[in-house]
Structure formats: C-alpha cells, structure tokens
Image (cartoon, rainbow, N blue to C red; front, side, top):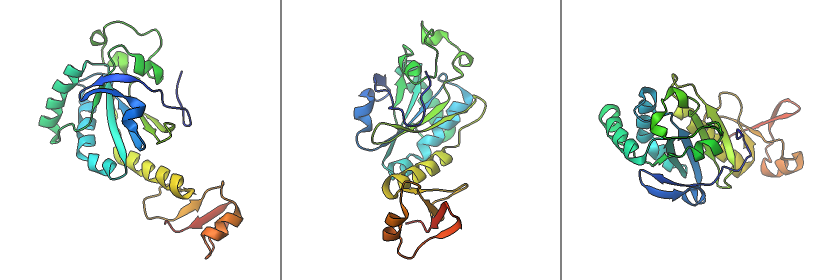
Length: 218
C-alpha cells in the first residue's frame, strides 16, 4: 500500500553500510530524507549518491539526516560507494540500507507484496519502482513523497528547497508560493486567524485576494 503525506513513516531495523540502525531512533528529534535505488551499480543512481554526498553539509545545517536504500547487501553497496567516490568526486558519507528481504521496500509501497527470493537475482528494471524520495519530520510523519523514473536524475536542490519551506511552516505557520526561494515573501497559512495574524504582523500584510495574506519572510 502506497504511503502519502501525513502517514507515519514505517519503523524498521536494518543493516546498513554503517552498521545496524532502527529507523525512528536513528532519526531522533530531527528530520530525515530516505531515498531509494533499484540496484547498486546503476548509472543514474551513481550520480545521485555522489551529488548527495557533496551537498550533505547543506542537509546537516538544516538538522536533516540522509539515508539511501537498495536491495543489495551492505557489502555490495560498500563496493558501489568506491565507484561513486572515484567517478563523482565525493565519497558517500551517509548510510545505505541493505533491504535484502525487500521488507522495507514493501512497507513503503515501492515493491509489491509478492516479491520474494534472492534480491541479487532481480535486475534494476525489475526494481524500477525504487525511485522514491521521502522526507520525514521529527514527528516521524511523511512530509514529502517524490517518485522519479530510472532515467531521470533527481533534483536534490529541490528537496532542500522543500525542506526549507516545510521547516518554515513548522516554525512559523507560513506557506510558500509557487517558485518560492528562501528570502522571498511568504503566505500566512490558512490555519492562522486574522486575529492571531494581526498580533504577529502588526504592520499588516498584502492581500491581492481576500484569501491570500502575503508578508516578508522572517
């Protein structure tokens, strides 16, 4: 069953390239990005894992942990990591989950319940649906789901932009308009009454429409 925004991210215990983790404990009180890969040694994913490694400080500065998942054993992902470092100019600096029994992929709705057997017998094409990005909040709820085809590299700068927006909403009850970038004007969320908004924004707000209240970003 597919997961969507607002669902609790399934907890799990798994082996990774950095040892065993329990997912919810590993997240702790912060945020997390879980992104999946059909198999190790796939070309598009190789570029993605390398890029994520290069921008990990941007996630760190936002209190966001990153973790990848593949159905390959941890040893295979560790070998893949050497290829990534050699070709992409950045060493993988976050764990890669070894979902060798497909349990996590099934729990997150990325593989069907009927999938079984040795994961190394499956091709990347058979696992083509393992191309998801999940952003999980401190409450362990899913805040974002993105799904890409195998042939299109993911835009992780966009994931950072969405996290900036999500954290703005979480802290200040503000929403962000189309094409928003950090520093741009924002929208007072509909959950905030005019009475409360007047207390927070004594200088008022712009109202291009009665239901849009625009203020500068905090």
